[in-house]
Image (cartoon, rainbow, N blue to C red; front, top):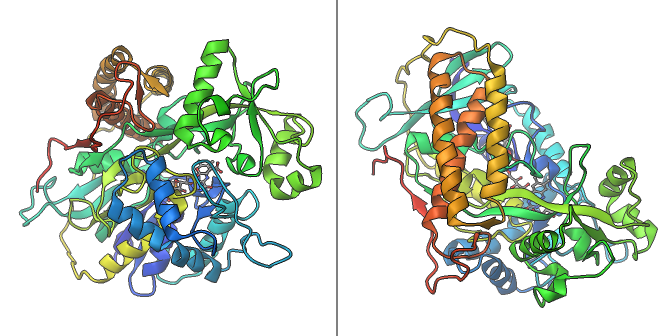
Length: 531
Ligand code: FAD
Ligand code: SIN
């Protein structure tokens, strides 16, 4: 077999990509490409845990209802029921591959915790480094599997479809992808019978984010360009509590701190969440982030504080060892003092539309994990439902791939190498990147208005023309690929926000402050869409 030819090509090495690969590898040849290395992903940084209704005190109906309440009327009922019904199975799969979830010392049962919007303790975790523990186990298995080839430092540029190369097929079909080998600086053509986009979210489109650098919405942009429908991109989840640090790169302070009793306070120690919601500090994220934003603007504050110092020091150190240490490294002893926090872009609820098998509207192209829109999260994702979604849809997609016998040996066109000039103006790329992330933060953030959105759209259109010219004329680089994708995703977020003439969940507009009676998804159809 040609080295660039796989039965299944998986783009992304987060939980969605790796779980799908392992579920297929005994029967199919698998290629996994990832931008930098296998570990760089949001999955690796997941802290809080994975939600699963496994306690005898927690009926499945309660997890379903919490997901729907957080989703503010927009969760797809059938998908929500399906995912929650499969949550125990998903958790068992992780336990079987060796993930040692934190247990209750006395009972030896899993130690379940809580986050905003959950009415029950139902989140399984490995202290405060759940993602790292899961990913390390998966990576070990991936690296030892004979049918899996891993290509690090490989960046997918675009999907190759039958429509794009003008090949007559009954339905637009995915046949391969162009992938930049970032070490050798060449774009190779990959051929595959199935392609899985598992590229994660797009929160790097905002100035402040909890996400790693790889989260630039590449899969959403590639899917859109290839002809995939995209939904609900306006619902960007801002996590309420990211460490406020002006000097250093920031990081997430898990919501499970509040699940274990931490309180949000103003600089004078006054609590405030009870003014906004009966659930107080454990209200869903949209409500907490909007409340913090309001308090900060009202009082001219640079941050608010999260205080867990009333809990015993040894409990805090054991339960949150990573957060304790990382804060201590920056001079904050969380057992003694409150933590300065601000909201930051965290999760992309929208994405390329998929069905229950992870299939997009393009044949042989799947989307799994944060890149996708399955209908589970509605207008606001319930905390810790994302790792769960990655696992449940990796199973359904694997089944669908195993049950389809599509194969092709079409010769795919090589990457157009006519852009031979190396760009000597890298500063244009970094400048545009910074400008985009700043105005997205200021104009398309937690609170939106018609005026801010139309300003943002105007800027995006200008920058897209400039970057489009650059893309046509110069050799591509990882920065240019990401910037082009970020601009595409920014446009989708702004267009969806403009289309939603109401406030719901994570989308709050000062011009339309109330929700409509009927909840509807925002579905954007690309110009080259073919049914
Ligand atoms: P990711 O894990 O982000 O992986 C994306 C992969 O795609 C990476 O390997 C990247 O290199 C690759 N990639 C991207 N673009 C390209 C390209 N063009 N070419 C090649 N490769 C590409 N959710 C929970 O349920 N529970 C939690 O406790 C939790 N905590 C979180 C904490 C943090 C700090 C963050 C950032 C998120 C957290 N979330 C949590 C959300 C959750 O981690 C993510 O939604 C989930 O891990 C996404 O998994 P994924 O596999 O879809 O994408
Ligand atoms: C957290 O630990 O607060 C993040 C959990 C999530 O995003 O689901």
